Image 1: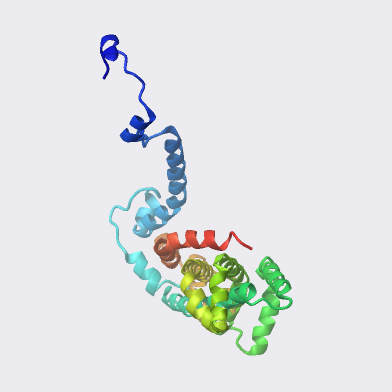
Image 2 (image 1 turned 120 degrees about the vertical axis):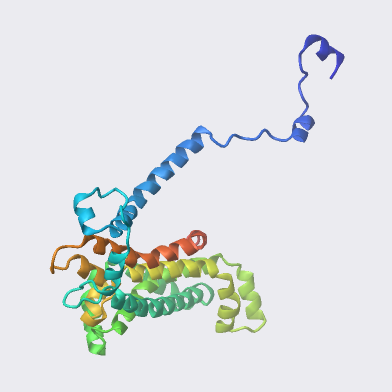
Length: 310
């Protein structure tokens, strides 16, 4: 410090080099902007989680506690009896086998529908962007246009087709319907994602003599994990949560879990058991919730990568 500054008590201005050497002043974490943003996020999170809280706590209560207690209160003596009944013995119409048969029907529908639709859509998107053929843009436009037509419009034609094929009222009919209706939007996602990949890789592989399937399996697929996760989440949640196709095409012996849940909740036999209904609802939603929690970050990354190019 210079003699002048000591005598006057005034600190001389610092040079840019001195300020840079000391580093930037740390910003406070609780700024007004962050407080507002986090308050809004917490509010909306609580708003969407509140129904789940009510369902879960109600499923752990006994019927007398539900009738004479507060719906928002925690259970006094929590137990999982309602969960056991919902899974094994709740009545879904004329039968009282719980959700277990519907769960396995949903598994049998979801797995093949997801695998087949994603594979076909990936090949479609890859071919439309890397192996263009005459009329490919028209084909793609028609395919995308079909994805915006309500499913109800196609119900009767699909019923007639599956009846003529001899599979109406079977799990095979539901699998085919989900595969067909899942392909348009998935094709759009895969096409946009493949368009964002470096074209030099595809051209280099063509120069080296690689063909259609070799490029697809050895180059495109290893680079497409994010968009495959997006497609997986969309198909699993969409097929698992579907009610319309299940109730129309599956037949009474092959109802998926959502249809069984509807039958439990709307059963006319006896007094409504709200704890069993809530337990059945939570059980039905566990699979989509687990998928989102496990692969949520990949979903956001894949959507961003597959939606920016056309």
